[in-house]
Image 1 (cartoon, rainbow, N blue to C red):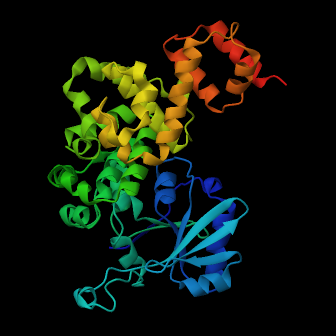
Image 2 (tube, rainbow, N blue to C red; image 1 turned 180 degrees about the horizontal axis):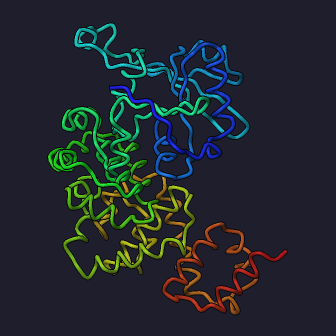
Image 3 (cartoon, one colour; image 1 turned 180 degrees about the vertical axis):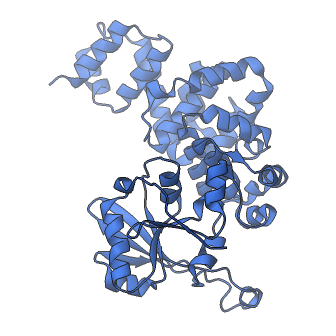
Length: 383
């Protein structure tokens, strides 16, 4: 059943350029709404970061109606609209293919089955992500009882969870992340389905696992999210050796302690390498291998020091070199004395971007004195 409601939203939180794109599409005679995470965040009083737009306009019509719009994709065609340093995705409403279309070899590889707003909402993942917002007329449009679930603080899958997880196992990680980001409960059937289908993540592409796992690490309550992933059998699939910490109470307490230090080391918008370096550091401290940081990272694909890096870092191979340089810098600064070091060596270390990160880590455990850290910082930032 379609529900159109007026809700008290922070319209001032809506990006002005996103608003203009919706307005211009409507002026051109099209239906156009904000959709997805930005609407969800507005409904729970979180300032949105990204704004996606859904419309009945075909990609070619969006390009005609909106300046600086570019069509991308072959299977899944959508439009990217550029405004200064911002990029907005504009997607045409889609529907799920019929059985006949799926069986037709000529069309089954396509993903451009355009449809109605209701069909588009019903092919999305969770009800809280399938709500539209007409920011021009200030209407909230809901085809999937998403508003009801927002009010109940509930994460619920659209359709049968088992089928949807087999269709795309990454939704398992998204469900866990969303529930902790929003502090919502997962619906009982959804939780049970995650437990049944956790192994489906073995079929997911590593880059997508990497992306969503990093999003979990960015959460303020990352440890609680990882614990739930362990309880549901998910962590054992995507990070099997990290999961072993939950079977070792003392090591787990240490891991938890270091995860809580995250704000002291990295910023909320940290790069992937910085996040993976931090989780690696916390793990190695927990299992007592912190003295072999750089040697463990040297050849993680064929490493016998720690099973964690043989398995988990395969997902993060792009960051391995950066992390090793950070750990190597930590070891050198810890062993060296600023006052006794030659000027040439000082200049070399001061020119490395890893110096600042290394000093943050070393100060967590007072591995260097505050005076030593201050001397390095003063030297590295002086003209």
